[in-house]
Image 1 (cartoon, rainbow, N blue to C red):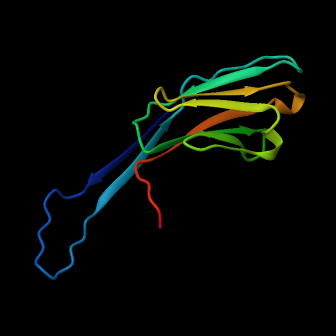
Image 2 (image 1 turned 180 degrees about the vertical axis):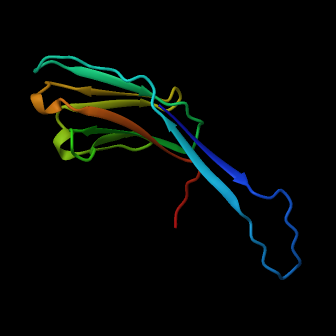
Length: 134
């Protein structure tokens, strides 16, 4: 997976006078691309692992999220790891994840597979370049 954000200022030079308002306009775009799609085959009762790597710049925090989706349904949040962590109630006993902020890699492991684990799994990255309190 790869995500890229771009901000472009529309005009290079803007002139204003003291006490007057100046408007700055810019375009924001984001690009996501899907990397290799992997099929994981495993039998019930066994363990399955899948990984995802992002090309990231070091920021104040990175969170790696995992979701699963059944056909015809919305994605279901499983967990996130990184500068902090959280796990959905249904996933606390059997789902684990590691996240390496330096390499941009996250691994999801599902223990003791059951038939309901058969789904499409997605990873996502949330980054922030700032932190603070209000």
